Image 1 (tube, rainbow, N blue to C red):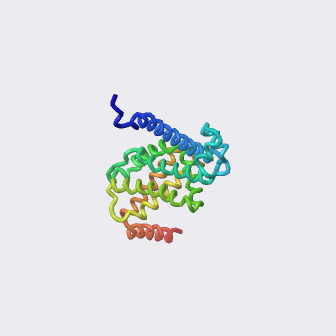
Image 2 (cartoon, rainbow, N blue to C red):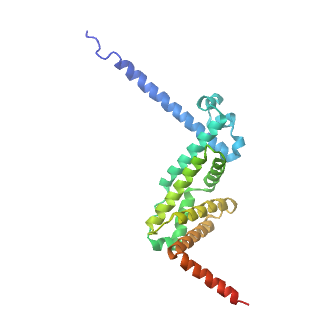
Image 3 (cartoon, rainbow, N blue to C red):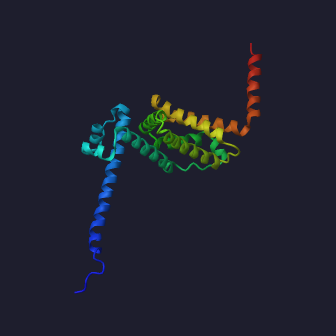
Length: 234
């Protein structure tokens, strides 16, 4: 009987799959804790996020939270980072908004696009995102995370405008549209009428794009005309 030229091959065949399985289970547990922490955060705010609450929400032993995270602060920060990363990836699921300029300026088309986005970003997810960004903005260690999320939103808006044929320096326009989108997210929490809110947002974006295309001089003339008519009124 000849000796096995690879004496460790059988051992490796047994041990390596087990090690990979253990690593995958560990990854899944950690992810479950991150997702549970976000749900607890969304329901009760930062004060509700405790080791016990997160473990219970995840259906894992209490010791699991301290095994994967050195402190509750680390758990909170990592869960918020995880959520923002998921938010950024979610832009891939948004409907195709490629259109020409006429489509962008058509209020009905714009409203339909916003409604499609609202259908994906429902009230609960929108409220959670607002809470996450407000908390991240107050934490110096998470400001880069908040910036990354807003940058992803701005990039999506930039590509939408570009596909519609909007030319020139659109940086300021994108900032204004982003502000309208965030404002709409806040209004949806107090006035959950998505159809009406979608039309308001579509109209605001259309007006901003029109002002950008016309240019400052044309907009100034419009306001001068308004001012002149106001002065002539009794």
